[in-house]
Amino acid sequence: MEMDIYMRRRLVALGGLVAFFIIFVLLVKSCGGDDDPAPLEPTGGATGDGGTAPLTPDAFREQADAICGPANLAVGDLDPTDPSAVRQEFQITREELTQLQALEVDDNSRILRRFFNALEDVVGALQDKAEATQAGDVAAADEAQLAIDTAEVEAREAGEQYGFSDCGQFLDAGQAPDGAATDTGTETAPPADTGGIAPPADTTAPPADTTAPPDDSGGVPPSDDTGGVAP
Image (tube, rainbow, N blue to C red):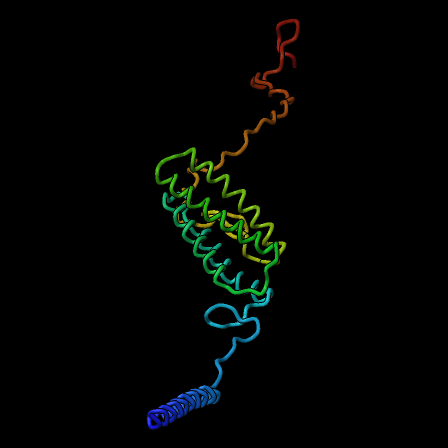
């Protein structure tokens, strides 16, 4: 009986020692992790997966105009008589919007949000017009064109207020930056050859001839009253 009690006490003590050893090992492992380098924190103001700092408003305006300028010229170079010109204008403007949205800028101003909203409306209306034109729906195409014009005015005003030079300055197909029509490759027919310009008619009346006609009597002197020849 006494032996059983003694063995129980030894087992309890051994169990406590094992438990203490396990706790000690766990503590050592947890403390040993302090030697591992801590993960790097993103730099202040960094955004996106790349961890790059956002652009300042001035840098954003410069990069944005570098996107919008070529896009405007690409639309202006389109042939307005080409049935696919509307579809191409939609694709160019949509790509312009995508590239602008990819720029990270440290600015959440109301005027910039207004510009992006208006540009999105332009892209949506261009898509509507392209689909209506392809379907031959003239009424829907005209309605979409009105929406395009309205959205472009909004984007132009917002872009100018924000300080853009090219963003918001839309061109129509066949339009040069100065507003003149671009050369679409169509030769202009020369004016008809009328054989030269006729001189104006001479309406000046010739002066009256007051010179008396010469005497056609053959040099014979006139006769006198007697019928003879005067000496």
